[in-house]
Length: 225
Image (tube, rainbow, N blue to C red; front, side, top):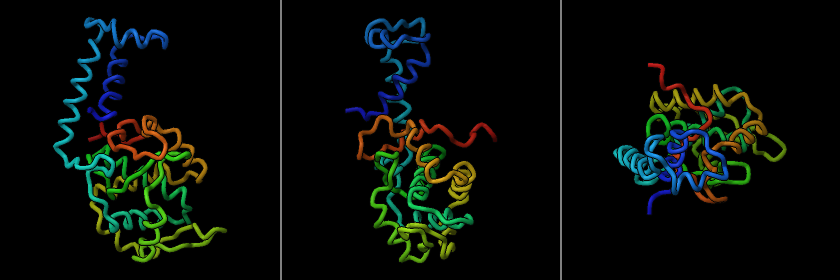
């Protein structure tokens, strides 16, 4: 069985290469009347999508739900230390969403996540799998600490030396994510992540495939040399 995202991207590319289609005609155009002169049959785009997926699989894609990387507590601790060390306390919701954007943007750019973490589709967008357990472990490592808040869920950096475990490219990804989303409040960031197309084709509480990183609304400009 083909992965869901192969069909999703095939249909997207198919529609981009055809004249505007009325919603009521969509099924008929895809299944019956796709004219090769105006863009080709859906099978053509499905084949192209499969070829693209095969090319991307040259990178370690042993698990598309962890971003082609084995989960690393050290790496996610480094991410937490970097994000909580930007000068202000970070609550659970902001931290979760910033980690999500960091991992998915890095996958979009380089074909691998930073931490190997899994994210599921929650009611308010992507949620880190095992958040409480992971945060407790990061605290025990000394990378960050609880900095206050009514529920004790505000975090601050404690020791950022672990950040050195990340590559320059991964640090650039984190910098871009903080520059793009760091000034948002928890509510603004949650709403931004909730509206992302990345998890649109994922069922509630199911893991989000990193391949959908191509649907992120905002990514770094890769056209700049």
